[in-house]
Image 1 (cartoon, rainbow, N blue to C red):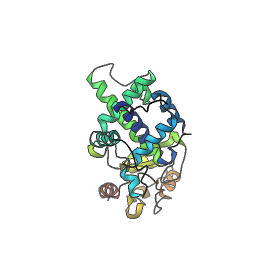
Image 2 (image 1 turned 60 degrees about the horizontal axis):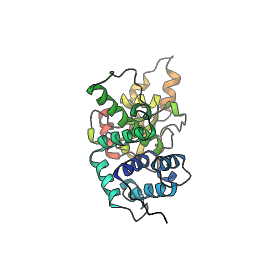
Image 3 (image 1 turned 30 degrees about the vertical axis):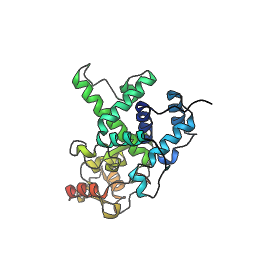
Image 4 (image 1 turned 90 degrees about the vertical axis):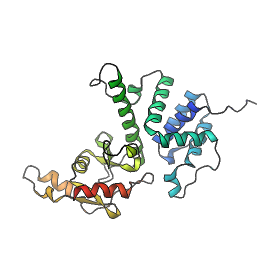
Length: 255
């Protein structure tokens, strides 16, 4: 019988990275991403799926829904969860760097980062890459939580979907990577939300600014489409529902 191999910190970080990017309901041995990670780690698919399920027991978002995950897990799971909670931006970048090394590629390519506008080398480039890697994780977490469906219109065309920050990246460092500070919106509603022409009221009700009523003949069709969402309720995800406190902060800036 082969001795059971303990999970290293690096392996746990890579497993947590994947846990953060896929919906809880897809943690099973048939998930292609779990199969790929198992191959990279030299572990069985079942053991990787089990490790991701172990992380679920530490997830406060699942605990609020009464989902406990598996009741057992190693001390290392708790340590890595705590590290990601306390230093999210540092650990996200490290996890992507480690994954890029395993795949024999660059962290920029792995995260889908456009490099043409980046400096050729140096600290400025590294700082920009770190920011974009973290933004990539935020996008994955938010869009996957919503099932790649706009929470206003139900649109499922992925190239038109944006992971919108409720409170902008620059205004609240503590919530930069918090998926509950995110909404999955189509490009037009994202723009309206960002420009404070749309906000989310109590009960997750969609509200639109009276400024949108000042429409021209050329813009009537587009504005009418935007206004058709007035008074409707957001299509909420099961995991990482938007934080009402953060939504209220955004709404206060719109009125």
